[in-house]
Image 1 (tube, helix red, strand yellow):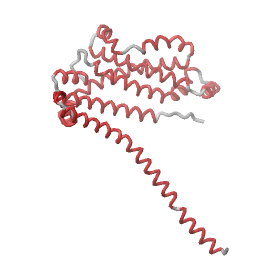
Image 2 (cartoon, one colour):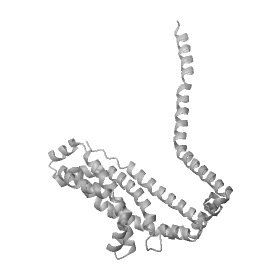
Image 3 (tube, rainbow, N blue to C red):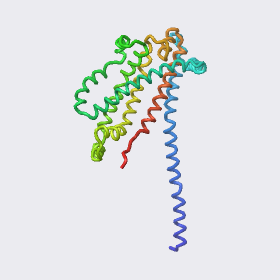
Image 4 (cartoon, rainbow, N blue to C red):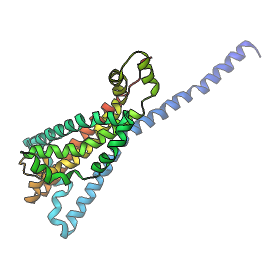
Length: 284
């Protein structure tokens, strides 16, 4: 076969093979687009279920009193909450209490988690009482909190901290146990003491676990918040929910439930992104 014929055959082969990478790229792009749209599909399904439930409430006479839970009245009331500023006035005290409760839980849970994860004797001593206390509902401490704290806000912060400390503590301890012993040995060989190794190796290595525990703690604390605010406070999302229920304002109640869900979702997403970026790779 002549050189010109060989070159012509190779050119034809390249032309035939060229579309394959493009097709693969198209398939990859389609998969990425579907992956990005998946959360929207889930939310659309939830919205469809809400609309279906609203149709049931509107069509069944026995449920007519609860028609305010339907999407139309609830979304209209939600817009009123946003436009009037009432949404922020209700959410701000709750966010302050959540922040304080999580701060207390973090300041107690993270150091205890480091201790439990790094000291086997401390783990054997502390594990039984911690597991026992973890199984007690935070709301069961409500009478104790009311007696122990001079203000309602203090009692609510205590209940939130009592709920949030355990995910932080146990996630931190689990992360410490997964730290590669080689890293600690290298730190000791370089002259690092116990505290220096803790600061330079252990804490950076378990930072992602700590943030994951904080994210789980946020979910638990956000659930505890509303019933905790049924106490004697006159502000917050829980108080607003209770007031809407007492006045039979079901459209406003549904709007407040939607507001709680959106705020919680935003906070969880923010902590999730922060935890995903906290992966630590030791310098070599």
